[in-house]
Image (cartoon, rainbow, N blue to C red):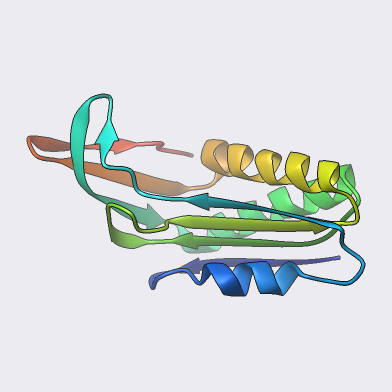
Length: 139
């Protein structure tokens, strides 16, 4: 069982994340790749800006991964999140989960992204043509 948790200010390497969890013991790898979309509630998004309380965010993401290991029979987990300015189409988060069986990988991956969005101190500002707004503000 291993978890790799990182917050980076450079483009995330999706292939690296997937390769990091691959193992002959695993028959299922589930990957969530979050991308910056071009519209939110009908408004055109120009870019997103992410900020994090890095030490606390890494600690919280590790707790989420640890809980996933406790709840499902997982082999490995990678959670990489980006900070800084991201344009439409860029990737702010990659989660890769490997397990012997697909059900555990699917369920754990969904749990990780859903819980990350609720509890990890990473803040997102959406920049529109006519203004900006902070969203997903966490503790």
